[in-house]
Length: 188
Image (cartoon, rainbow, N blue to C red; front, side):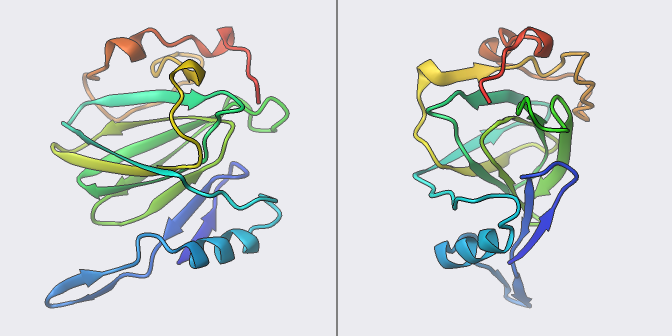
């Protein structure tokens, strides 16, 4: 796998080696050994190697925006996300108060075609907008879901200035109740 850094320290783009021919393609979507070796190469970014304990999957129609979600310590989660079918704009916001990029966001297109994966460490709010119907989004997490630790920042907070690339966002009631970024006190 090829690991690329981003302008925000800690975020990694993971590109698997895809082997294709006239029959289709094959790739390892995850290998513990390859993951550990790749993260060790990025030692300046992380001292620990996340261990994933749960896989999640969602199916969404075009225009859905999910996020910006995170869990607070001690239930904060590292995530490794990807798209199996369709396309999303994946977005994260840096919640690490001592980071030089605190409050900044980063986005990347993930799709079933490009097969890119995105590693999001603890200390980031995460969300995505769905750009194609019937998009299947999957992700690994390093901590189990804990409803009491879940938090949400408003996806459309003008302070963040995120262009979600959708005309009319389809949002859950829960996500409409997120807090504004400036009203949030970060535990990270």
